[in-house]
Image 1 (spheres, one colour):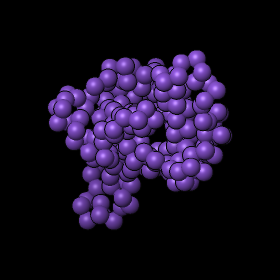
Image 2 (image 1 turned 180 degrees about the vertical axis):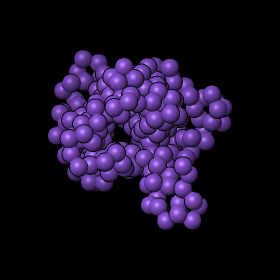
Image 3 (image 1 turned 135 degrees about the vertical axis):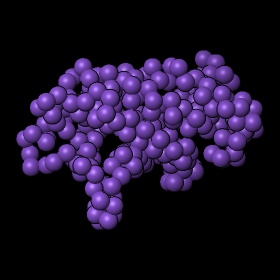
Length: 245
């Protein structure tokens, strides 16, 4: 039975637009997680690029000439030489990627569960449906996020070019999008999408299956109902034991 239009306007936004609310909630949670973990990602990337650049220049003597050794020393070196905020250099494309990816996969998974596959009579979602739904949601979410993922990698590679003394190719995130689009067209934004969606399918097969199991347990064994708050809590509990992808 549909809700009258006047009464529908009085409902909370989460009930009026549940899919949009879950997209925003997942995107916000992914943004917070990315901001918290990005310095680790940056220091890891710096170590990788530093080693590759040193090997290209010096060969076997590169190990002794490396300016940073280890995650902690790398992070401290960035702070001392470039400033504390440089630990978040390049975080913008990473946030774009996680908002699109996390929001897209969660909305897709909820749609598959509620509309396509459906729950059993006891409101339980069978494991095999969770597995298939999780893989399909990961594929769709990653496919939508592939342009932002590509720009994120390209921006990270700018650090390697800087270490090698080469001129930078991009002035910023939007310039990177525009240049890739100009050089490769629409298809250029989806370069490398096949291995990306394969990885996303495997990751989400476990990730979203665990999420749905946790949420089902909370609904059955606590006073919580199946709403946006339970969705957020389940996402937090599942994400607490793993870094954001």
